[in-house]
Image (cartoon, rainbow, N blue to C red):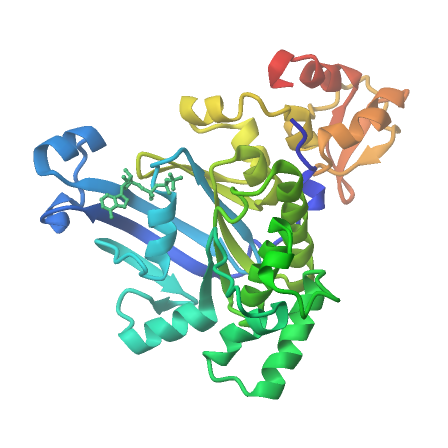
Length: 353
Ligand SMILES: Nc1ncnc2c1ncn2[C@@H]1O[C@H](COP(=O)(O)OP(=O)(O)OP(=O)(O)O)[C@@H](O)[C@H]1O
């Protein structure tokens, strides 16, 4: 399995205040749902005793501005419910959701409509293009229902059509486009509205693998260009590792781990996550930080220098061809050294490598 290096992904400002903060979120389906909040029974026990399904259980996390935040887990783990709760497409049972510090749970109907249109827009798996409208009109449609003037909406529509690489297809109809191109129209329509946060629910799962990869690259490119905060649901780990600045892993409604791809692969929180990541080549995801060691007193320290966030796979040639230990430097500070031995240990470490 090939996984792109972390270096290809965008960096977000770790110190910036979060755009979204979720605390103690619960969604329980069934009778007397509120009474189930706080229960420590397993999903099956709960179902038997109360007839309720706890789809999301006490989940807390923060999303940073400009981050691509991926929610992943097996089917039924609660991903869609969690993300739909963020804009109250599904009404949460308990917990707090703050968008830029504003309480989403107490928003009235008007502010909620406003929030879904302008602030946190959902891009669904089937983009719901209007078949009798051409690309330009499909993209402009979202702006039309928001009451944007004709001239402005067509200028904006042409702009985002260019952004998603559909120049020249303005007059085509959806059935004249391939699946991947239709996805781009859907993306353009979401971008045209310029929401602060884009929510994607498995947008590429219906696409064949080649087009899927093309669309993933498109999202990465767009993210670099427009720097928008994106929350992305997937059940595909390689997609999560490819797109995510951070990944939230769910099981049975609960949060199991939140971390960067290298944290999830290098330090899985439990056996469930360890199992998930067992087929991932560690050298494609882990960085030198994960394998460096302190220099021995007698080791020469005049070898080549690399940064701690260089992905191991990208450092293999430099380390193996160096005659001296490679220094892992953070600016002027020596963090440790890496030699052929550390590299070979990762690469030769069996299926985990
Ligand atoms: N309206 C509902 N009523 C009752 N149970 C529901 C409802 N919606 C979802 N559930 C249950 O909540 C749990 C989580 O479902 P959810 O769709 O959020 O999972 P998911 O991880 O998104 O799955 P998938 O990847 O298959 O879409 C499942 O057990 C599901 O059966």
